[in-house]
Image (tube, rainbow, N blue to C red; front, side, top):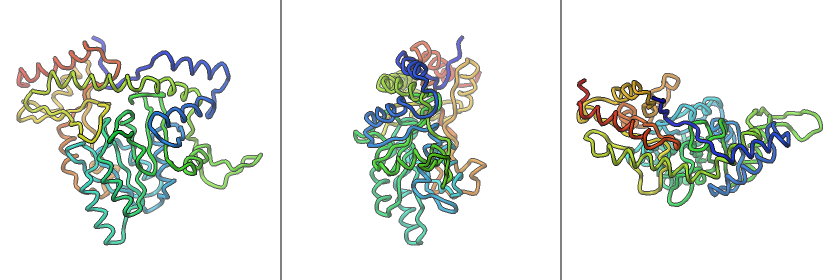
Amino acid sequence: MNPILLSSPHLGSEELRFVHEAFTTNWIAPIGPNVDAFEDEFCATVGAAHAAAVSSGTAALHLALRLAGVGPEDEVFCSTLTFVATANPIAYLGARPVFVDSDRNSWNMNPGLLIDALQYRDRLGKLPKAVLLVHLYGQCADINPILDICDRYEIPLIEDAAEALGATYKGKAPGTFGKMGIYSFNGNKIITTSGGGMLVSEEPTLMEKARFLATQARDPAPHYQHSEIGYNYRLSNVLAGIGRGQLQVLEQRVAARRHNFETYDQALGELPGLVFMPEADFGTSTRWLTCLTIDPEVFGCDRESIRLTLAKHQIESRPVWKPLHLQPVFADAECIGGEVSEQLFQRGLCLPSGSNLTDADLQRVISVIQDMYDQNCQS
């Protein structure tokens, strides 16, 4: 049997046309017409005013935090249930993350916890420099109350929408509500440039500064002159061409991933002890990854037993993100709450969710899990 991967790249025909154009015109290096067009087309897709295409979502986060003025010894409030790349740029700048637990409705940052924490910090005169909000597994966080409390205290909100391109919150794209938003085009994302990211904002001066910093902060001069520390973060013209082709099929990719979820839900949703990640009523999830939790006492076996059994059948699955406050690298970081994200990690599993999965692939996954329930995991 062929392996079934968690979320593999899904390419079409248009990507090659843009890449071929880059080769025939010899626009191989960073910047170029594909980069400019990708930024414009991406803005049109998500409803952003300005964008800067960069080498990764992590690079976009690093730039966003720096542009927000984050520096040594500052604190940044950050979602805890996420990939480590969300918080690493905080450390790059010498700042300290303060992690905030999830709610059960969206699995994203709990607005109530954040509001209480910021009100308390305001009384102490110790407000954070920024709030970094993640939109997890294709689903938006409840943005409005988070944005309202950030605005009240004039704290910049940065949205990590790396996993949520194509989702909506009250009809609007995540990543476009706060001061800045970021997206990722890593190989496992809903669209890919093999590696790449995008930073967006309504403020043109921020994006001008982002492009400046992302090209080694070269001053305008005939020689190479640098007055600030910069980075080699710009996206190549070749990869931007891939992104342009991928962007044209974003709606189809979202539809395919939602089809995956619906197929899993119809087949497995009634099994005792299995609960799929809910879709909050304030928006539409892309179901970038189909995630569920397993109650071992009810289902008959635990998350890890299912994962290992799927692996024996050459099916890749993965635990839900380990909360960042449990990661050794952030062992000394403060966490506000933590119980919900810890439970989601202990019981949560991500199933194969690529937009190129066939119905036969989905049935293979379903059969393994159904058989485990039928056998009560005693075999």
